[in-house]
Length: 264
Image (cartoon, rainbow, N blue to C red; front, top):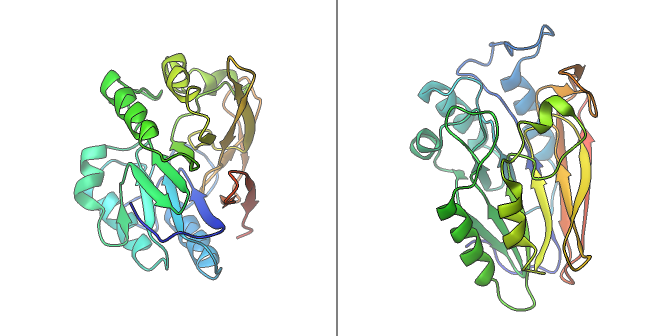
């Protein structure tokens, strides 16, 4: 649990940094000259100039190569950021290695509170698989955390994999597997006001409709390195502008959010 109560809470979300041990390493799976470490550093320098924010949430795929030097390097890049950084794992990560290498300004909590708002960070990493998964123990823990949210408080859930289809055939098979188990828990708790994910390297705005007709917004956040074409049946490059999401949480349980792109 962290941060004092505030009337309005503002957060950043960045995702899919795909960093390497060297800042001079190029992203290996696109032909364009993209240097993930440099892109992340540019985003951090830009965001670090803003005031009135409470934290930055990094929603998975921190590294391209799951090695200790890669995690040590991204940890170093994040140390000078003026706000706490809360990280969760993606399919390109090794959670145990993250726990070993991330320290100082960077942590991996499952629950961070900001006044009446509670951010729950979920681990959808599935070893050796591009898609996401929440096992029974994780689902039970999610239910327990939601049960612990006080009356009159609100929650946002952050995860790497998308829990609803985004209309991109090749990417949708790599979303959260068996999402019905996740939603069966979430829709029982009206305190949940939104779900934020990464993974898709594109901007997305969707929703899940509960049995009682209530809609829970689902927002996908683009990467800090490279973006892919949305609503496309096959893998296709879009552009190289790094992105981040701005999230504003109001004390009445409403929120506003928008994606922004940086021109390098």
